View 1 (tube, one colour):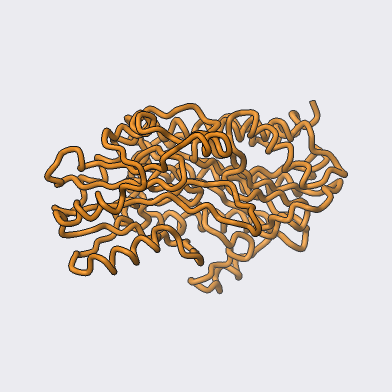
View 2 (tube, helix red, strand yellow):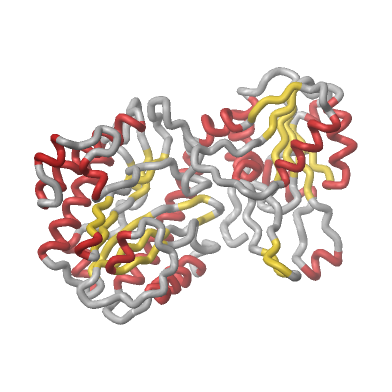
Length: 430
């Protein structure tokens, strides 16, 4: 891993929050992700399953975390299983965690080799009545392949049919949505790395540059600052491409007079940042571009103010829609008749702003977190309004990552990333 070690106090607190909500005489098990092959002997870079990382800090394949607060033996109330290292693995892949290193990383005293899992698990299941399965029930999940968790669940249902089953997801959604200060600090680091990338490209972008060259500049800056790269597939779209919400080809020329939309973010220690900035390719906004840009900026600022404890996510989006409607009226993109005759299920503003304004941020770019209950201090949301005008070959979106605070004044983790139109022009032309 490129990132600095994380104090295991974070993972100890996270496990405490999870076990506090478990049923009595229950076991919860969390598996690492698979390493996915691409063909022949090649594989994709390993990405740890966010849940086992959140609860243990272990960032290694073929690891299993077992939590059993009511285990008869104290040493088995938290157990970590890791892949046994050897000289052959050390030479070909690099040494894996020793038991002592696994304890130092996680704060878990009892560490076994993975080969001991079946024996230990069977023994502990004779004491347990319920097992928590870690299924993915995120509202945007789109899993098509069988995971290690899926295979584990099949095995348990086959070998232990008399046990009750429960779900880890409701607990994880509740606790992962509210960040500890250590997590906010990690998110801030990811945002700071993103800032360095954005400032770098402000000096680089000019007519004739390719979108993928801009992507490369970001990657250069991310890697040299201990990130392993983009937190998600970057969107770098110039001209009409900016109107394609998930444009990822990044293979076109940035032309004089175009606006360039960049939805990018660095990861750090598996935590995601998520930024969008839109700049004029030639370093100078036209009057029309500036008017639309400033409208989006005003919506973002007003939306940010609403991210306070007690806000309901669905109601928040309704209010943001009203603000956007006012701005679109001012830009002449819609008129009063459009608003009066709008379909309540698809308001008039949706013609130019068709996506949501905010989602949870954290270990996942679209992180776990409650959406139907009032917002709480410690939740982290994006704020990302946009206006997309295909007929004008222009799409403008602005996005920051914001922490809900007890004081009611949201903390913008991207407050130092240039966003004012005048500052953008000044930096691009300095």
